[in-house]
Amino acid sequence: MSSHVFAITRAAGLAGLMTRLGDAVATYWHGWRNRAAFRQLEEFSDAELADIGLTRLDLYLASSFGGDPTKHLRVLAEERAGPAAQ
Image 1: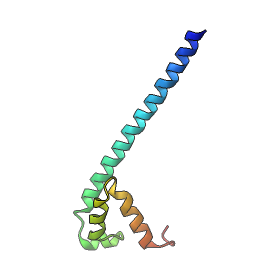
Image 2: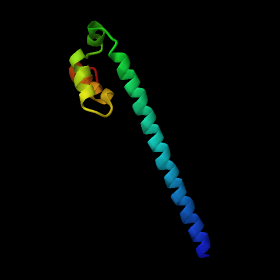
Image 3: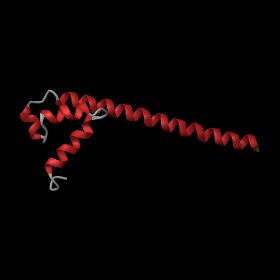
Image 4: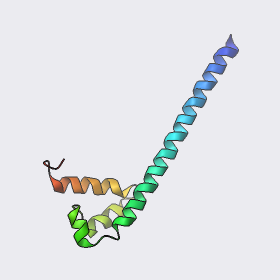
């Protein structure tokens, strides 16, 4: 009976490990995709950035925070849009 319990515990541990590994891969993928989108924003003109509620300074500041710059840009754009746009 103890070997049966050990097998169940081992399977649960393996399932947990696979879940954490999957989450890590998904986090990496989303970060990579968001940084690629951020690089595209750097090619926008000032007028195009203004159309989506951003400035060139916003891009600079978001890139200096580290991590995912698109999260910082989203917050800035939402704050400028006001509660009616959210």
